Image (tube, rainbow, N blue to C red; front, side, top):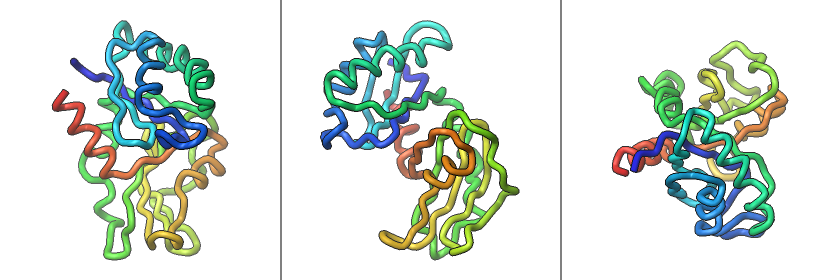
Length: 184
């Protein structure tokens, strides 16, 4: 099977209240018309073979949305990206120039809608806990410093600055996702 797209659900944590379990998520996408589905980790990241043309992935996710609401109560946004675009976003290790010993996480914040990011990049927040490294179509790359309880939130910042809807994944998650897609 060949996965061509990734679905990035916002605020999904499989098995938790208001989120589906893995089987319900995958079944809703298959019932929505997907040729193949593989939920990846528990954070609402899904490999998708939508079958059909380039618009099929969006259509599958749109058809699955009411099924997820009915079956699990999940009603948040889903962002759809071609897998090749996700891979291109991290090509060449764009985090290398801002990563240092204080780095907690390298992040990719996927965003739909809103305005372009109104900052010159790279940009560092006033607490020196977040660098926004680069903006590429539909994604903002960031370096989070600190650790649990002391870090900055790239997701809420990108939403506030753009007015769009966003969801964030770590670089490690994205690399593992791409490796899983290559093995499929």
